Image (tube, rainbow, N blue to C red; front, side, top):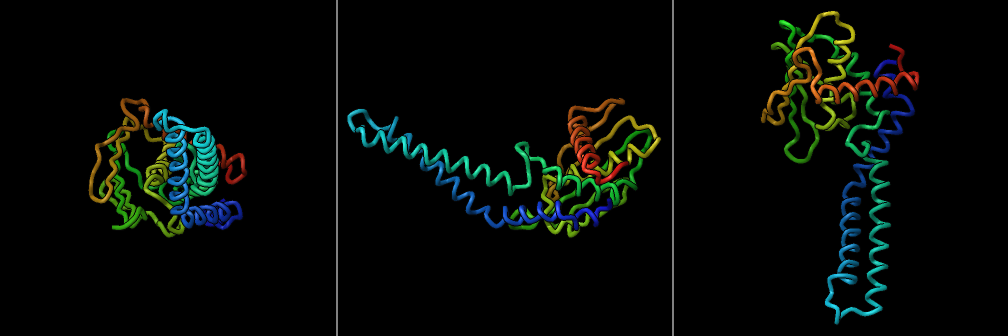
Length: 233
């Protein structure tokens, strides 16, 4: 299945609908969290923080009620937030969305990689809007060549947290297809002109811990895609 075909599918459109609802209700969720925490604080005051001489049976009951309400509110908001955030407990995209990233990367980011004396070096440059976290541009730089990520292809739903995984889907696809020996992979991430330290994903012929984790996520997405019959490569 091609990227454009997949993002037009019912399963992906449902995910996009949930993401849209999440953005719409995000402020209310934050307010709800604050209210839930306020209930818990009220319960703590009634049950623990008040001086012994000021405590009464009525305040004890009130504290229990406030605590119960606070817990229920936070649990409900956690469920609601998890459903519409598009991410799991570890901050990773849900598989249905991650597959779209995989398909896009295989079609648009798997070519153009350079191996110089066994080294693959690349830089990811991300700029965001002045207000908020919305992405303005994403550029992949490899050996002096620049490749722009088409943010519009994802209807503006990509976030900063997604970019490294998206780029690496292209890199891992290249490594699967290429017979060229690689001894090291080094990446640099730049956010709004602020450059981070170079990170090795692969060094001295071995995957680093970061590289293993990233490759593991990539393979997990691949398994999901094959299981769902999205592609058979």
